[in-house]
Length: 113
Ligand code: DGP
View (tube, rainbow, N blue to C red):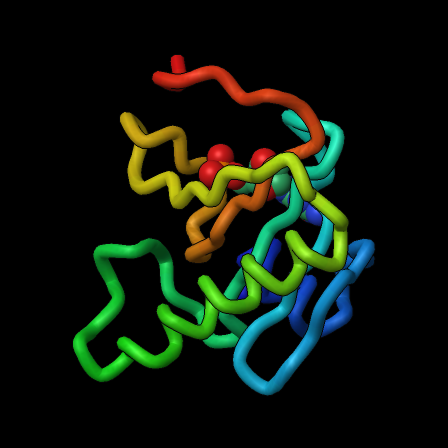
């Protein structure tokens, strides 16, 4: 999708510190980390947000969670971690390409602000 920062990362046009790549997904370090470890897992395919996902993309959505688990393990987040999808303005979404946050490395407060 033209003008999408995360599509540009998928295409290698914008550099990112990658931690995982496969045929469906890419994971990389967040440019503005909110925890000692803050990773983003995104589908290669452009989906603006979770609401755009269709029933036939069930396997893709499951894959994103499995990648989230893998990159958390790779990052040795033994104390635990949090997986978050922000959707829309009230959800705090700022980039319109579906992404799964993986946060860890410190105790995370609940509920979020
Ligand atoms: P959200 O607010 O849920 O839409 O999260 C978007 C995240 O994307 C935010 O934590 C900052 C991160 N981000 C934005 N632009 C870039 C970028 O160019 N590179 C990387 N690595 N992360 C980015």
